[in-house]
Structure formats: structure tokens, C-alpha cells
Length: 393
Ligand code: GDD
Ligand code: MN
Image (cartoon, rainbow, N blue to C red; front, top):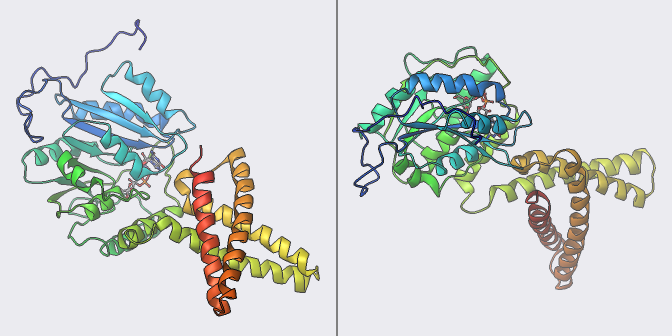
């Protein structure tokens, strides 16, 4: 902090907080300045939205003791640095900057872990959610009747604003699918706007998947006890600055979340995705081989080499954007990763052929032997590339 900066009195500071609940139990005295509410704001490229959002929060939360935690995934527009700079003027604001990672849900989880506030809200940076609900959400939680209060577009008085027909349909379908992993009459499990008590969050914490976008659904599906919830209506507003990050891959991430909740206890979803991508690689391999060998009349060897290279490359590409979407490589790292992937897969072939022939030598039928070889190859490729490619910065 620069010493010359004149610190404005914090609008949110209060002298005493007589209503502060002892919900965390045991602590007899609390500092009157203890933060009561943390507003977690996940961001990716939202630099223009920070000041307007902070202003709105200051207005709505005046008189309360609160903080704003921006969890930014190293946005190229400098969102995190911008927040740090502002925090010298507004000490109730801070940034968590994550490098080499992406993901809305994990951002929210880490934001919640970084605060000691007993109540935590999640709100998008782009002001599409109605921040004026926050005091009412807080009052509801303080009453002790609820664990979580959700800003809902699907209860009377709420609405989707200017959503396209396709997006409305997709959201409806996603809501139906969510019933697979948790049963409740929550009307808007897809909402990204809610407030939760620390106790309820702690209860779900260790079961959270952290996949994709739908942190609210994740929390509901991960809670050991059904959550006592309330939905408050709001109208989804139009974004003014920046753009939405929701793209077709969000659907894939949603699938990953549901899959993790359904089968995650038995098989890691990533391994499952990796194997599925491998399956497409097999199809691509045969297609390219057929084109080279039969159509272009290249030799068997040349055709096989081309097919292998193409399939490895497409496998790498799909794994990068699907399986490891949250750690995807871009720029130069994309190519160094590709080179490592070629190397790892080449070693995988040795394992595959070795194991397959060893089993075949035991007089075990050909398809079991080749299948075992494939499994070993896939497991090796998966483990090695997880560690040496996508876990590396
Ligand atoms: N840290 C981080 N990492 N933040 C992200 C990422 C990411 O990978 N992707 C998106 N965000 C941030 C955005 O910067 C924004 O503040 C917020 O998450 C929501 O992203 P949008 O791209 O604006 O999503 P949306 O408006 O289409 O959908 C939102 O509203 C829906 C309805 O409540 C999301 O909150 C959805 O989850 C929600 O269903
Ligand atoms: Mn948005």
C-alpha cells in the first residue's frame, strides 16, 4: 500500500455489531469489525465491471460489515491487478489470482475458503444478478431458518430477461437432468447467485466436485443433509461490459459434473473422458489409415505412421479442450505439451504391445489380450500426461 494514499473511511464499517450471531459457536467475544458477509465474485476478463459492481454493493450493503473477494483466473485484461490497486483505497476488497487454472466452481470454492465470514454470497461480476437481494438473503440466513438462500429466475416475480429461446430450452433441460443427482423442489438449481452459511458450506465441502459452472447444484448434491433453502425472485439483467464465457463446452462441463456425482466414487471422471477421447482416436486412426492406404495408395508403413500421428494429435487437442479444460495449454505451451504427448504415447505403445503379447503367450484369446494391452496403454497415457503435461505450469 502506498503511504500517500488517503484512505477513505470504509462505507461498510460499523462501530458495533450487536446483531452478530454466535453461529460458529464458542467464540464469546468478537471484534466489532469482524466481517459478517463475504461476497465472492468469480471473474474472467471483467475489468470494466469491478468498480460499478463495488459501487452497487457499497450502496446495498451500507451499514453492514462485509468484504468483496474477487477470484480471478489470471485474466489477460488485468482484472486481478486492478482489484489489488483498488483495494488500497477500499480495504474491504481483495483479489485471489489463480494462475494456469480455469473454472467458475473451483474459483467460488477457493473464495469461500479464503474468508472467515459466517455468511457467504456468490454473485457474477457482470451485474446480471440483482445485488439488491443481498440484505434480504442475509436476514433470511440470520433468522436461522435456512442454510442457503437462492436468487431464482423461476419463482413468481423472477425471469430470464433477454435470454434466447435456445438458451432457455437448454437451461430447462439442464434443470431436468439435475434431478438425477439430487431430489428437491428447488426451482432454479442452475442459478449462480446465492448466499450460504459457513456451516452448510463446510458440510458439503469435502464432497464437492468443483467441475464446471454449476456450483449451486454441486453444493446441493454434495450436502450430507438436505439443505433448508429459500428462493427469492429476481430478473436476470443484460450484460453491459465484457462478454459471457458460457459456450458450448459448458454443456460438456455440466455433463462432467453430473457424471462425477453419479460415478465419481468409482472411476475418476477425467479417466473416463480420457478413454472416450481415446475412442474417437481409434475411429480417426482407421479413417485416416483407410484414406492413405486405399485411396491415396501409400504404403502400409507410411499410412500407419500418418494415421498414428493424426490420431495422437487429435487426441491431444480434444484432451486439452475437454478432459483438461480447466488446465488447458495455450500458445507455445500448447506445442511443447503436444511434443510431450507424442513421447508419452510412444512409450504407451510399448506397454500396450508388451502386455498384450505376454497375455497372448499364456494362450489367452486374442481379443482379451489386445483389450488388456489397450487398457494398460490408456492408463499409462492418462497417468503420465496428467502428471507431465497438464499438471505442469
Ligand atoms: N474465476 C473464473 N474462472 N471466473 C469465471 C470463469 C472462470 O473460468 N468463467 C466465468 N467466470 C465468471 C465471469 O467472469 C462472471 O463473473 C461469472 O463467472 C459468470 O460468467 P458469465 O460468462 O457471465 O455467465 P452467464 O451470465 O452466461 O451465466 C451466469 O448466470 C447463470 C444464471 O444465474 C452463471 O452464473 C451461470 O452459472 C448461471 O447459471
Ligand atoms: Mn453473465
